[in-house]
Image (tube, rainbow, N blue to C red):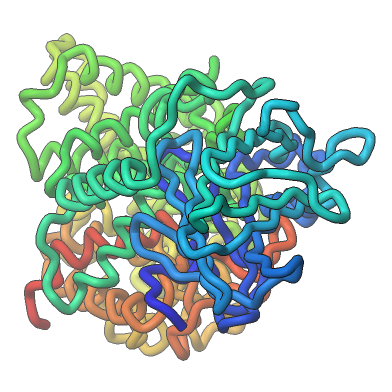
Length: 592
């Protein structure tokens, strides 16, 4: 196989701010002659295409691109750098560069011709997949929108069976612009040359990488660059056409093509060491679509917010930034914006998620816990857990700290501080036992359980607000009792548990658990323990892909049973990529 920076089977090729992607066949092959190149759209929102059915095709792949010779498609392979994707065959090659978030340029210089074939789902009404605009250019549906094809060198014309073909000019050169549009497309007055596209992408990605992680240890540098490229390519930016008001990082191409609020609380921690401006932007972005109740939606797509929510980790993120960096230079209006958002988000939980009024909040469904498949769900809902309440206690403390920074009345700040302290005490009284450690509670039946799940151990984020003996016993259960600590990280369910499934949060190694436990151990002053998990998880991600779910016995990615939107595998995760950069930068230079 040729030189490949990132295999498109691991992460489709794109760039910051773009919705155009270049992908291999679903479940395809990287081998020469077996790879396919599909021009794809990342504008994924379930209701756009299949009435919200997560298990139906969302038509990510739209248009197949093939090199042809004498009318016949040529076996090819895909090669990538951070800046270009090359479709290479023995009959010639063409290169693609997404130089602008809205368009890409394709160029060939060795006589190769290019055929474009539309997937059946993208054909226009009346069965015309490519529409001749009578000026040498064509347009086509691109998902629910349009793609404009503008040849600059070579001739573009109809091929057989509804295809279009771009044939090179007399010098063997072809050059075509492919521009995405949400409205009926018209050509711009000018486009960048192919070389200008490459220069623009090189400049922008290299600046991003240098700004987020300027110098990772050599062991982690290559994977770190892939992680940075994944983060950069998944970053959405305000463009006047979408619901995004600030930069946000989407999760996974095609399957989870959205930015998730609790991930942004963690991204604010992950990316803050060298780029506080970006981290702050990501944290504030959580509150840009807050609804009338104060709730923050679980996810945000290019069209609008989702319908559910996730845990309130934004206060935890603010306190991390406050305790590690100087926030005094941040604009006061942005500090006030965050305070108002945090206050409404906290009150939402107190008003809508405390049915019995005891000061302990509960979740009403598995989806809003953040874990989806933890064993303590067997208790039923409404369900209270110590980790969720720990996040809320930290959010109350954040309101006190941030309130003082922006000049809130001392009475207001003190009231939030007292509420935080009282919540910590209630957490201990409600969920901790000397025999079992941390457990969850069904609010109606009052049944306790779930001690075999590692999720409640995330209560360690409270740090030294917990009594030392509870910290010590919690850490001992994680590291000394068999079944939790593995060579690959902490298993989300004890491997000796009857509820162990080794999938999702039922026993796998997954990104949010590793990240929150590491942050929790740091908050407890146990950096050496945090470093153990960090090194285990870094090794897992070095040996495997940047997937956010791994087998706790082998460390291999666990994506074979996950087929949302008919994708046969999951792609690299922005969540995991951010975590890798954080761990490699913070712990990677320190031996165990």
